[in-house]
Image 1 (cartoon, rainbow, N blue to C red):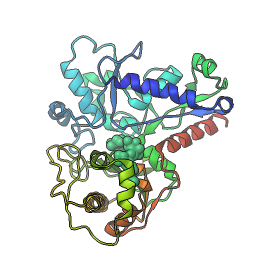
Image 2 (cartoon, rainbow, N blue to C red):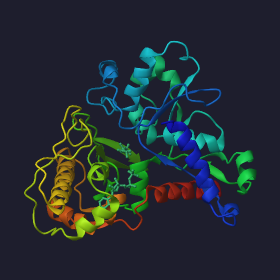
Image 3 (tube, helix red, strand yellow):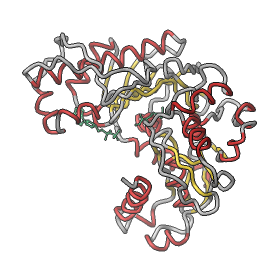
Length: 384
Ligand SMILES: Nc1ncnc2c1ncn2[C@@H]1O[C@H](COP(=O)(O)OP(=O)(O)O)[C@@H](O)[C@H]1O
Ligand SMILES: O=C(CO)[C@H](O)[C@H](O)COP(=O)(O)O
């Protein structure tokens, strides 16, 4: 699969999808991307120097080097961190080191639109080691030879520049349409839910399960895959588990999920105890690259099987929120749900019972809505 080509094609087909009469009304564009999906590109041409490292790939070979330079239990001390991906590339690369630049998926796609190479945002840059409290890369990272590859970092939603002229004229966007710094997919889902009070949380039930709790305290602990993204003057504390919809997809189509879920009694606890994963390895609330999926025994009834999987994912979610509490985050009061799993009302009821908290579907469940809110922020700031 040529990922980079498919992302580029998807971006331009989305621009094509914007109705022609609406294009002149678009004031601003932003993009969210999967966190820690990493590209090493040529700093002059922007063309990738190797295949991208995907968000869920692990580079355990780089972990000892990263651990030897970063503070103990720092967010980068995980095989899937962006920094481990960079170090892994650095250690095997011979010829392109001088001309290389690191970008995240959203940075690179935004570059296609604004044309200024080397810009990221402080959400995407967190897992390469950027410190959003200091608003800079920390000294221990600056002193590494590979730090020359790091992009400059601005706040999500900041205007980077105007939409490139050739794209603007090709598609009929307005002359002063701006392109703004983006964010990660699960932060965009949080923004879409418009939760603004500490104690409000969003669980994204997409291919994976990502948790974000708005907290006044910052918590980072790689031993459990817990980290904090900056959200203006507060913190989005949480992590991302490898469980989620991708496991469901292995067994059931979306249509089956809907039909089977209707037959589940969510008030009754399932006796089945699984750890649903697509492959070996978990990030949060247990950080264990060797954790083996547990999806047996499989009962004859598909309804019972699905009930067991949904309930087991809810237990992972509950463990995650309890862990955040134990580590000192603001107490969670209410959970909104985003992503494909948000449409499953039976699952919402199961989760409400298991979490012991009010759980509801966010009004806007698509991360893209959150990216649009960031673009709006940039446009409003630009017009002041
Ligand atoms: N009714 C449903 N109940 C639970 N999960 C569902 C349902 N319908 C779809 N899904 C899951 O939602 C996931 C897709 O959600 P989405 O937010 O689009 O994911 P992604 O993280 O890939 O963007 C699929 O993995 C699918 O299994
Ligand atoms: O698992 C993922 C892929 O969908 C999430 O992108 C991700 O790992 C969450 O990261 P972040 O908290 O940095 O947004």
